[in-house]
Image (tube, rainbow, N blue to C red):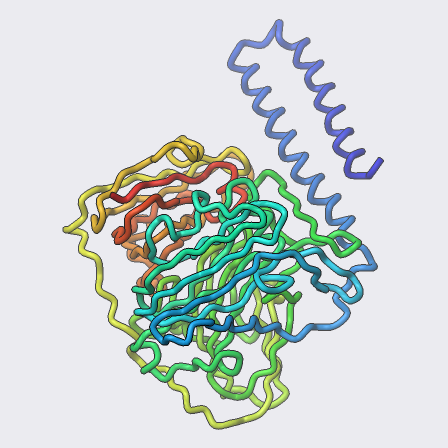
Length: 502
């Protein structure tokens, strides 16, 4: 019997003894006291399972045979080729497939990817283009492809209603009609979203427009413009993934990976570099900073460019969120090293190389963001995110595919008040809240103006425990759309609703 099973058995025996004592106390305890004791037993049982599970898992994960012997070079996802010669129409082909990836030397991990073994390509489009996607599901199970952040009709959104059966294809078409931005795509099929993302299904969708191309920002892909898909994973001693759902606040990994490599490095010249950061983790927040505490500039949030660059030394980013930043490496000398950290954990390392000519710019004005008018709002919607682990709800309800939770008229503007009440038990560290098919603006956090880097377009907003966030949102496209917590285990446990735009 494995040590973890032995420890759980010990816990169960202890609970049985407590139950025996409880039966003897029933004759003398009043009902209120009995309820308190029962609740205490359940709480200790859950906490005991949580701690034992995590401790024992780490005993197996930290096997001496699993070591990151040397840093890997940052993998750069390929740009997906447009198969249509018409500059106004794009045709892209995606194969959802299984493969093998070597996160550790000589240890193969079974993974999933789009057109590759792990993760997927970058799809680059322009505003005004008609995009035809051709998705072939080569897996043995169903999947879907949700265009996270893309403003499209409900039937093109790729949510759980657009399931792609094993061996079948899906061919959505949509017009790109939103500002330049860094979006992403990933599965959204009920019951397996979390595991499919964990095993590697994620990719980037980059939109350019006339404004973004005229700004002279760093935008040469793979030269001074890089995607950073940041995730975390745990592994078993044979190199396979350990998907460990602790039943608390989602699956958190032991290793940080970027673009599919564990804490990689990137050689950079002494120029301005643009990084398109995606938090693609199942449940983990990342609080990013440079090891020398130098500043950088955030230039974009989920839905596009900010009005002006925001100088900062920390970037908090929760699951589903994106941020574009500029790091100016001209401040450094050849052979310097700068580490990107999240808290105390290494994310990746920048190796400073040569001083070369830099023709890119960081303009003081990036875009003009038209603010949605609160006076035009037709409704105030209250969203309450309750619970943790597998006991989560929105407004006291768990997701039902056959239930529409709200009806909205096309082009209506609404104010949503999203709250995450504090939890009595361990956990409840906030929820990243995502709405499909639209971009919104944040009005306030606990009645106060949001941070400057949250004043742009958003499709995912982190709502901390005990916090209330107000947003203003407009729905431009008809159809059924999801709204949910982007901790993927919470989403699958039922922290999701759906609305229909008529």
